[in-house]
Image 1 (cartoon, rainbow, N blue to C red):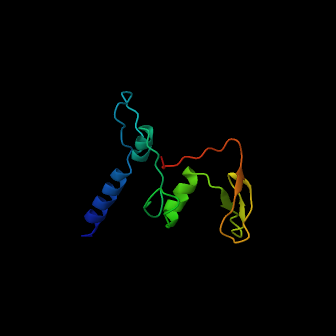
Image 2: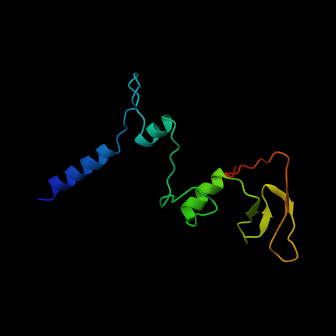
Image 3: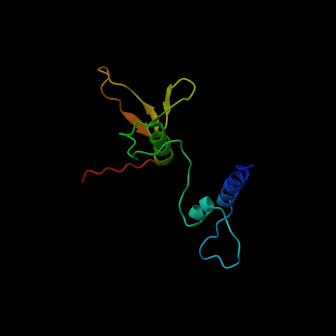
Length: 118
């Protein structure tokens, strides 16, 4: 019996935390959830199990960052999910030199590359 008021208070707090939050600038009295309010402001909201550590696809090693960078950047080669066999991405074809150190590739006409070197 002594715990009933505490349990009811906790339940009320939990229910209030799920209530819709009004978005600033809306005059018609409508409300959206807080996550929708962020995306309504132009932000892209995504839920991942860990934080993204960077967006440099050549450097990141954690799963969350790799997942995000593959959504941002196209790569020359992609890997088949079933067995990690390399398949063409931007590269239409490629070859490997006899020493195994270089691999020239042929890309489509629509491909454009940017570099930070000037």
